[in-house]
Image (tube, one colour):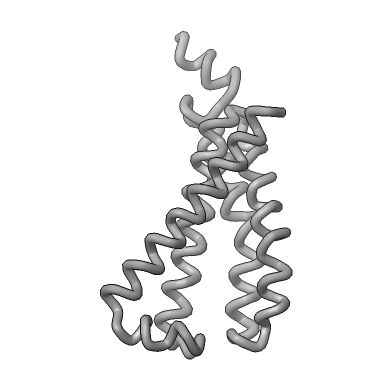
Length: 138
């Protein structure tokens, strides 16, 4: 239980770090993005970039959580659910700021991305519990 809590915390920290780094890079290297950000007047390319960063952050967070938890990928599913629970109120509050498709894609992908990465990593020795340890001993 403690291991899973640490794994979830590390996953959240990973996702936040990726989101912050991507935002800083976008602001610095994409002047139009920096100009659009205060008013949330993003172009389609900017919205796709934001969704891509969200997907990357979720996948990386699930990878980290699975490696730390070593629970066969269960922590990744929990992490996806946590991300959904944390994101849903924010997206509902800011529904008018973005197109509906943006919110729907973002929210509907959190759990599946995390879970699929967890399942993939569970098959890898670094992300599995006893099954991975047994494979390493062979």
